[in-house]
Picture (tube, rainbow, N blue to C red):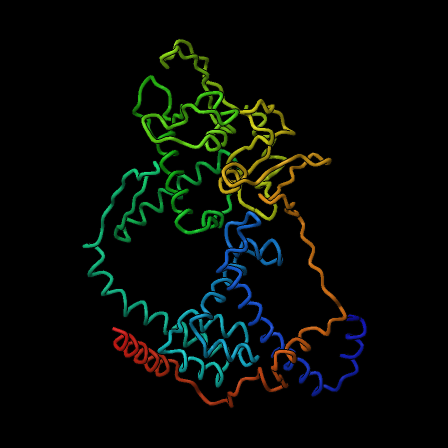
Length: 444
């Protein structure tokens, strides 16, 4: 497509023709976006993003499609919701609804209210639809909160145990006001940790880990480590608390049989010990034939403070392609446990997620000629830090593809059928909430 030619054509068009082109293309764009979101939903369902070292679909969209984080997260949310809303999806696929309308509908639509909401969307403006959706969200919240409050306190618990694989397994449920205290503690720990590593904090990264259970686990461990490290001020005369891992040198360097376990805890894989050795305090001990220590070195920090500052100044964010999370740990490209030097060219700043990826999950790192790290998938494929998006200017564009899918779009397809009549948001909300309650009673 020649942009200059399009501009010249638009300048010569009568106003009515220009209006028709705008509304027609709006329908084509909506239909194409529906297909795109359905593809995103399937890609997310198959977790295709994981093969590129991404932690979720929205992070992959930000990297590959150039979307901002909030926009990518919202696209994924809408894509997932479409699978349960066939009527809205069908109208969207025909270009009859815009993405803005669908985004609003998916916030409140359920099978029982889908048809009513779709009717409002077709016969009203986007602003009117937003008012109805806001009213429904308020009513849904009020409708559900009483029942939730009655059972919330009775269901609180916390339990944990070590499973057969040696992992600490636990779960808990607490009241929301107490949960707010836990969240506040998590955020306080995150601020302390970020202040040590970064000049500023990006709060969005606290929600970036995927899946949700893994995000919560990482934050919980971070809180425990921070409280034990910074909050145990009543301890006297001893070292600060630390997680102690015992590992034999041959096991650490060559996977030989030997010790590799948490002190008084379960066994760890050697690769996990290597990851911990990248950025931790190390103490070398000499044992006798019975495994009793007879000599020990002073505790040394693997990475001195001046190198840590240099890595943060150079990398600024996680060095893994497409990741914009803060640096949490320093990775030795040639492992420290395999005599890799602790020098700036051999160090890369990474987040917790990607540090584990390059150890336990089979990803590899090497230095490029420009001195920057290059990351490879387990199958050896290079992860391009700047993926190219190739577009064929002669493929006919969105209109041709919509025609191939049998979607006939005209200047009126995406246009609202509203004729200026007044919409009563309260009445519409009441009717929809009645349908919602009836639908839930039928299901029960």
